[in-house]
Length: 90
Image (cartoon, rainbow, N blue to C red):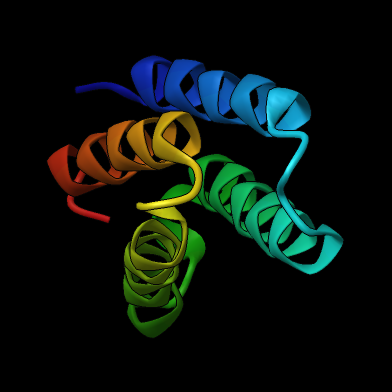
């Protein structure tokens, strides 16, 4: 999966976040910050430290666990981004 597909998955996630009316502000801000970090990593490529790269996947996995029951569409979008990043080795 290439970077454009990751960007598409991020766009889908952002759209789901904008529709998730029951999502609290702290959770929304946390996910938006993670999305911004992923965009930054996509632009930086190999220039980003490996430890920072690995932490992005962990953040997304934590988000999945947090939203799974209450926000299934957000969870599905987060899963898409996580899978896309895993396919890029991030």
